[in-house]
Structures are given as structure tokens and as C-alpha cells.
Image: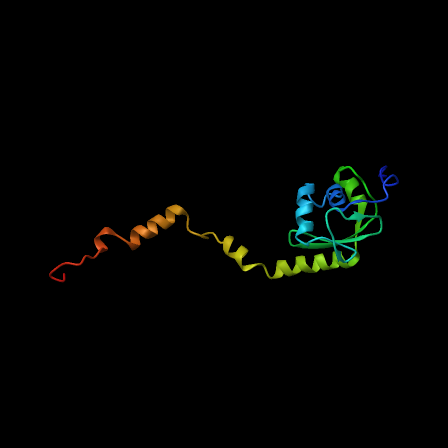
Length: 149
């Protein structure tokens, strides 16, 4: 597939490119990630209005997954995923690092996710109420009486 808009555009805004390349679902999400410093262009901090060109290198994070991509094309419209994938190429180092992190997560999962996967897990509201009933039964109440009983 050929991207017809590649020859017409020499540069475009970073947030628009990230949206068109389908890294983020909306431009607002792209702007938010750029503002948090999770996106860099050519290893330097960037703003959403930064102009990117073919050949620039972008480092970004999608969730916990870091990626480094090289821009191969520019498009001012968001197309289907196969067309969007023609706009960039992930670097071999980035793919190796992603594979290493995936394997690391597989071998040593986050403890909190292991706890959440247990069948019992956290008590529900109903469970907490029954625990409180057992813990504080009306017959177990004490009172201060004059005779000390």
C-alpha cells in the first residue's frame, strides 16, 4: 500500500503524527503523554506542537511498553492500522528490549497481580459485614457496671 499523503507533507505536528500512526486513540491522549515527558523526539524532550519529519526517531511509552520508532512517512489523516504501520519502523534494539521485558514479566509477575488472581482475593462488602458480625457480636459487648461484673 502506498500512502498518497507522504509526498505532499514535509513536516507535521508530533501529536498529529502519533494519532495518525495509531499510537494513541485520540490527539488529547497523545498531548497528555507528551506533556508527561513520555515521548521524546531525537532523544530530546518535545512539545505536542513540535514539527516532526521523515527520518526522526521517536521514543515513547504505551502503558508499560517502551518503543523506539523511526518515522518513514507522514499522513495528516488517520487510516486503517495496516496503513498506519507503514508510517514508522520500530528499531531492532527496541524490539529486543520489548521481548526481554515481556519475558521478564512472564517469569517474575507483579506480586499484586498474583494476589488479584487468587480465587478468594479481597473480601466483598458482604464478606466484610459477616466478618464484622462475628467479631462484634451483641453478646460479646461489655459494659461498665457499678458492681464490676
